[in-house]
Image (cartoon, rainbow, N blue to C red; front, side, top):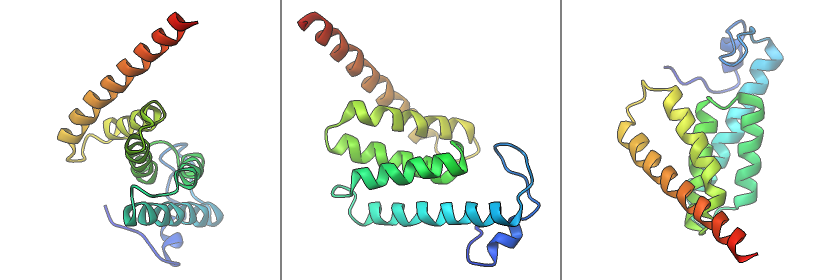
Length: 145
């Protein structure tokens, strides 16, 4: 689809329907949606500029704000979830990365038209591996008590 950006872009959203609740966008909601997307893009740009030294708490705050205002199936939430899981896995926080990887997979499964089958398969395998690690870790903690 077309990329909508800039100050005049909000007018193109007025009257269109929200993919989450199906209500029509009023001017304020259109502006809010575009502001949320702009903030998500800025966070993604910052992450991509230095992915392994990115500020994880700031990235997670941006992800939470985008998920709350745009919904879990929005492209910005999918990309921020991917950034969060990559950063957390790189930092060795594999259990913390799991929910973000699962969110990315939900996004990819909801949008089967995207040409990302190989990425979906690879990330599904990684998710299964992380879930297995989480189960084994919980068993060890119970056994060590």
